[in-house]
Image 1: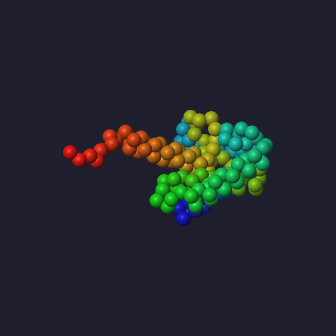
Image 2: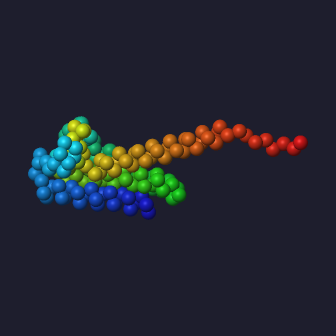
Length: 161
């Protein structure tokens, strides 16, 4: 259930934020929230991250569908006790759905988060994908650390004297 809730929650928040931006801004318009640090800038991105592969919408649609399919598969394979992993894949799936929706509706993704220390504008869905992947990497690191610690522990012999 956590995977579905995270996925739907991320998609819904992403959709709401994009509708607010599209309703209140015109493409290219920017609002200084924290001057020289953070702006809201409405950009229609025809490509992937950083505008790469502009105009190849079908590649991104197929990729998003594969990601969502992987999330659905993972929902049934990851044990319920693995809360962090389940939350992470839900975030990734929701982000993928958010950007997929944009691509299917207009062929372009609505971006608006503009940190002035970074030359690219992105959106909530992108953030959730990156954070979800980061959480999965953290979980894998954590599991590896625990496994290595167990291997390094001295074996206790069950010998009688």
